[in-house]
Amino acid sequence: MKKVLVLGVGAQGSAAAKRLDNEPIVGEIICADYDQKAVDNIVGQLRKARGAIVDAHDLDSIVRAAEGVDLILNGLPLECTQNVLDAALIVKANYQDYAGTTALDQMWVESDLFDPENEPKFEDPATLGWWRSINAMYYIYGPKFKEIGKLALFGTGSAPGLICAATKYAMRYLDKCDTIYNFVWEGAIAKRFQPFWWSPVTALTDMSEMALAFEEGELINTPAFGRPITRHFPEMPERITFKEHCHDEPLQYSFNAKDHFKGCRNAYFKYAGAGMDFAQPLYEAGLLSHEEEEFNGQKIVPFDYILSHLPHAPKYHDEIKSFVDEGMALDSGCMVIEAYGRKDDEGVLVEVHVNAPGFVESFRKADMTAEMYLTGQGGYLFSRLFVNDIFEEETGVISSDMLSDSQVDKYFEYAAELGITLDTRIKKTWEIVE
Image (cartoon, rainbow, N blue to C red; front, top):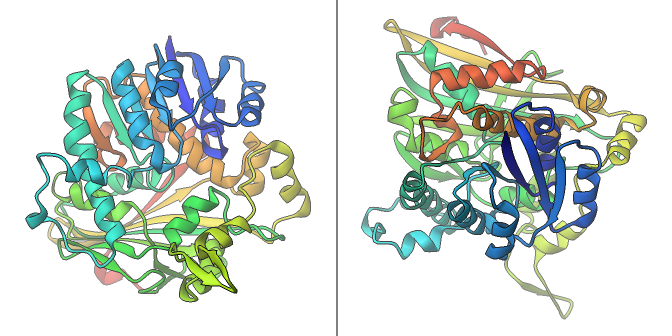
């Protein structure tokens, strides 16, 4: 029987814990957080769980909670990543992270592998730190996890995560890939003010930074909220304009373009929805700046001030039910992959649509928001691969876009049990009509 530590039982960690509770091979789930209410709430709903209060800024606190576990599922803020990775190494556990990380840049700079002459040149210094952190994951932590015979897997929510597995799935229909687009539209819109259904600080941080694209074989910064592109997929009530957004996918695909994406040279993440509509004017007004400034004799950080006024993401039953009872202004959304390339010497577009329950259906099926359903449970599907030894032969560090074809198939076999399915359309490029 397997033992799993779910570290961080917010909206996403609690969703994964609920599903792991029904996994026959899992004997115990340790639900850990600094928030006693969050721990008590999820433990009270599960059969196999026990709670632990953990300060993730204290390595020893994590290690105590993690002793004897087979897998650590990290659903904590990015600044805790190094401590959780180090704890996994100490207790010799597999490691899974919903996100990537931006917190290991100094580790990379201080390592023998650091070569400033061969680093990419980015307009946004934050992007360079992010690139360095991913290098630290692969090339510093990778050998360490290989040494203990364990695997660390990062980027395992819905995006990155589920969308990466779906993008890898699209590659089987191409001999050579040129361009990948990942489109996400958040179409779950409440009747009250609720711009984000996940961590507001994570969402707003992404909104505050320049975007990233992989273009002509090079990673580049692009303007946040820039480069608009319009689509009308069947899931949408009308044509939607998607814009550039700071996200992990182009970075991950750039590292794995040759081995996992058929030589892809261009990759973009395009985003739309209520959160983008809310954040764009704030960004343009400078209100997402992290720099301290003086206003009427008081020193404030605009980002922090805006964040203090945002509602948290609902995660408890009564909170979610209140939105359902009020009725949603719109209950929709889409996640679509476009992969352009060649198959049998013809130009081809592979279009993969991810189908999943909407907000109201997610609540009725699983007592969750649609975001929890897709991100928390999308993460759980990777955990299920772990506990059922689908990664048995692999050690080191990989990202969610590096699954083998058989692992991708198993992932979506599991996903189908939750009503998360793929709809794939193959079009010759001369047939494409905008």
